[in-house]
Amino acid sequence: MRTTANNSSVTHSTFSIERVYPSPPARVFAAFANQGIKRRWFAEGEGWQVDEFTMDFRVGGREVARFRFAGGPPMGNDTVYLDIVPDRRIVLAYTMIAGGTRISVSLATVELAQSGDGTRLLYTEQGAFFDGADNLAGREIGCRELLDKLAEELRAHE
Amino acid sequence: MLNRINIDQVFHAFGDPTRRKLVEQLSQGPASVSDLAKPLGITLAAVVQHLQVLERSGVVRTQKVGRVRTCRIEPAGLNLAADWIAERRALWERRLDRLGDILAEEEPPMGQAS
Image 1 (cartoon, each protein chain N blue to C red):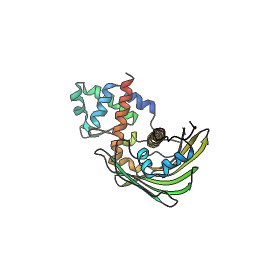
Image 2 (image 1 turned 45 degrees about the vertical axis):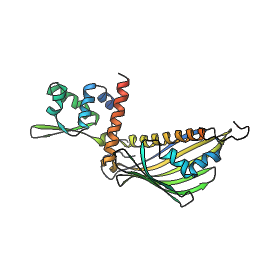
Image 3 (image 1 turned 135 degrees about the vertical axis):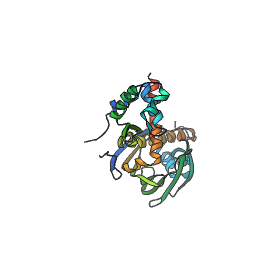
Image 4 (image 1 turned 180 degrees about the vertical axis):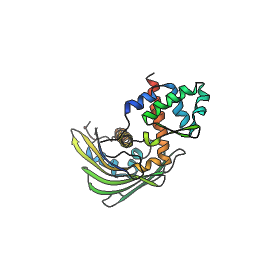
């Protein structure tokens, strides 16, 4: 993993998140497969203005999301679905774009498993994160937000 | 091996109200040491001392051109790959929490199952 600040460095990393929902796998799967439901949890609610959200949920199908923070640069996700096993698994690749520049490319795997009456969801993202994107206006904004958050956190402990 | 900023140093840097004010000022754009000192009403020497702490933490970079030392935020110092990935992870944490909320509110009546 390289974290130098030059424009051409790439960091590879993997993270996983697990959730258990009281709904059966079919309903959790539907929340990924249905455009209206997915838009709600995926794109809305972050304080983003959603400019576009279209998806073609089938293997080889694409999803396009365009959004922005108030006054911020346009952000986007370009996704292609690589593997879909109903109620069990979704594998997709996505590029994240900020201000017209690709800032990362990731392989994301969603695994669903029955857990009692509910569903255990495991989200794993394997990504190539482009450090050159740090120079973007978007990252500057992100940096300021980070600073603000850090300051808030520290104030709370004063 | 990770060439990353010592997080303790970053927190130490932000642990002082004067240094936080300096960072706030610099987030508006680069400034000279005397520009920074004015609104704070402290001596240049004190500002320089705080700037040294900030510089050591990698948050701020200073450069002397002629007799003027210019200071700026060093975004590369803050936007570590680790932060980058933590942000992405946080984004998905929030998404999956919202998914949980939506699943809960839309739970249809499914017989006795509950």
